[in-house]
Amino acid sequence: MNENDHATRLSPYRQDMIFLIAVASLAGAVTAGVMVNISVGSSVGWIGFVGTIVGSAISFGAVTHHDNRRQKQEIKAMRASLYAEIVDRVARCANDYIEPWRDWGTRKIASEDAKFLPSLPLVLPAVAGKLGLLDAEILLAVTQFYFRLSVLRDAIELVSGEPDTSEAIRLQRIKIIQRRFLSCFAPALRSLTLLDVPDWEQFDCEAAKVYPHLRKEAGDLRVILERFAASAAKQNIV
Image (cartoon, rainbow, N blue to C red; front, side, top):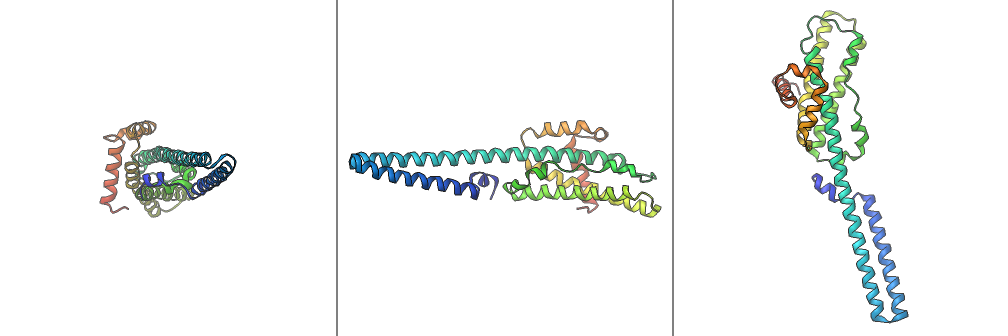
């Protein structure tokens, strides 16, 4: 089932409400038809009855159409919101990977490095109850990216919280963080591609403006993400 199917399929609660409205309208129509039939004669009564039935059908169709249209708009808005958050988060990941994590060198890890913690998601929890409206392919890509981002956050939180370690452990932890940065790029790129929002280039451009180290890399944000995702694949980082 794709998103168009979701958008044209009413929620169970909405279906029940529309069904009850239709039943109530039909019951009212039958009652009105019978009463008019008794009071003014059979032909006029049946005309009123048929008119009420037609009116009820039009009302039912109008409510259904409105609900389908509203749900399509909700899906469109949700996709744009998710895109905006994902492109911002992955642009920052790329920025911080470029400087300082990619070439960390001999610098010691300090508690101040907690500033590199990825920001917590805001859009994802806000739309969690409606994620099922997305195609399965999109939903899997989006959840994979947010999972990788969470794992990266945990790693940076750990190393910045325990900065005093041996040289061997320091090097091991830096390598872990580098790999976790790289693991974010392919799921993010897949999510952005599948969400496919209108004017996505503008979203990407605005996100890239915020993070200065991206200017050190050749190409636009998509090209940078593709290059980093390819690097992760070569190292079997999934």
